[in-house]
Image (cartoon, rainbow, N blue to C red; front, side):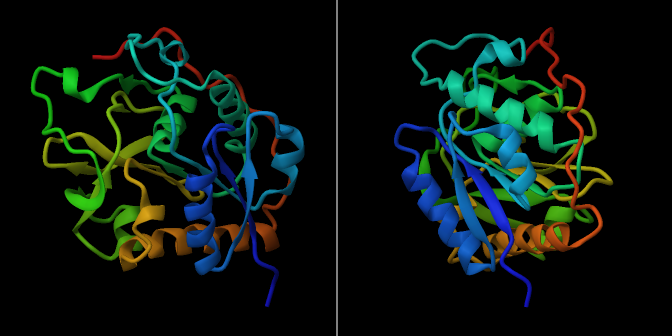
Length: 248
């Protein structure tokens, strides 16, 4: 059997070990191995070694990256923002599989030129306030999407730890799941290698088969990338950010 594919997991430099630990367990259980990526790491070196990438959860994304409205009293991590934007600009032009988790799904959208709702509870019709690591939020999947094929379900329940959400979609991305309040809960790229972003934290739900299947799909595609003809160093893409966008 081929070696386990190496999947990078981005985290904050402050307190990100818990998120990394749970994600590493999920990836290990489904056949991969991991390397933690933090803001001081060398993007060029990483891009040449990784077989897959998880852009993990964490603090809010700085509004200036997508031309959004600044929300007071939120935790930001500009160094991590810079790391993840540079890393995704480096890997997205190639065929390396990418999974975005919570903040990571939002960053995947921002890197593709989309924008965010800075605070879903400030909307005219805000969703119910729900913050829990337990699977209490119902999410409906778009049938025929990659995510629905992976999960083998029409809907499932997930956790909820976010107040930002995806608004206008980035280039080549589509919505593949929403909650009952119609907030975007998952996105994926059309006709691309594995590019999936989920608004919940599947690493905290590995006891659910649908969530293990998500990590298994990532690891499987990372293995294919590691051993297939697409294993080459992608050329840096053009700037992907759209700084003049507006949130609603």
